Structure formats: C-alpha cells, structure tokens
Length: 247
Image (spheres, rainbow, N blue to C red):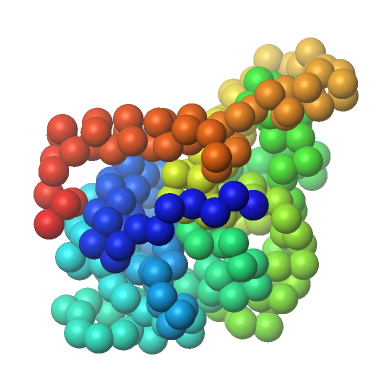
C-alpha cells in the first residue's frame, strides 16, 4: 500500500473530530455508541477514541481520549472510554498493520444487509465498484471478547469494507479519508439495495462490468485525491455549520 504523509497529533485530533461530526451530519450515529478510532504517530501504538457518553455532535479535538491497544487511557482526560467498544477496533489495529483508522456503524440499511442471507448484491452502481473489496464476518454476539479478534482479522483478510453479519458495517484505512470512502460507498450500496428491494428483481450487472467498475473506482486508491477531496468537502460543510469540533 501507498505510504501517506505523516500527520501530527493535533492535526489528527481535528480531522477525527470533524469525522465524528460528519457521521452525525450523515445520520450514522447510534445514540452514544459505536466508534471511529485512529492511530497516533510514534512507536507506542496509541489511538484516539471518542469519550464515553458523548454524542458524536459533542466530540471535539480536545475531548478525544488517547488510549493504548487495550483501551486504557494514556495521560490525563476528563472523560472515560468504553474499553469493550474498542475490542473490535483493537483487533484490527493489532492484526492489520495498515489499519490506521477503523470505523464502525449500525445504520438501518447496513444492518438490514448484514442480516440478509444474500449479503450485498452487486447489482447497483456502488456495490459494483466494491467487487472483491468486501469481506464478511459471522456474528458471535456483542463484540466484547478479545478471543474473537483473530477470527475477525482472518475473516477480513485484505478487504477494507466489512459486513459484520447480523450486526453492522465496518471499514479500515491508511488514514481517515481512506477508511471513510470505503464506508460511505458500502453504506450507499446498502441504502440502494434496501430501497430497491420493494421494487422487485434488479437488473443484473455482468461480472465483466463489475470488474471494470471496480478497476475504475479510483477513489479507493489512497494515492488518488478523490477520497481526500470528498472528505475535505464534507469537513468544510460541518465546519461551516458548527466549527466547535476544532477546539
């Protein structure tokens, strides 16, 4: 994979806080639950995570909590974190070297497709671009047991878009925009699939066309600016509405 420019902790704090606000803007929140985690520079394997009990609309650069791979707080913080909620994230950060950012959501469309025996249908614009980019992991209950971690990593392999069966959606990336574009595309594919189910059978997309669509989907390449452009545009949108995430 392409190496991306290093970012300071201050830069990552603002970008991650902006990402939480973007999730809120997109309606991807689940009360005070779920997480977006990002690895901090340095050899310590430290991460930033949202404070326990805050809605995504309340997350700011300064109240993000620095933690280690076990979910323990590093340094001083006015907030606690949910170590159990970090179990799933830590498995990826630990088991996939390039998983610098991990995102997890429980959207209605994502959960519906995760519950469907057929999984993600390739027969829409966004799903076709995700050919060979989606992995599945079978449901083992609430993700609070570290023993599930190696099985999760094995299920994922190299795929950056993940459907957790009977659960929700997950993505990982070299940085926040890279993880975001995988999750946005997967979520969009699920939304279209769920909405279209009421209309009956879909028009099949031939495998050769899926392969071409996937090859042409440059937004997934971290060396291509499309993913960064998309994320930065949404960041400007939420900053215009409420810049408080920056402090």
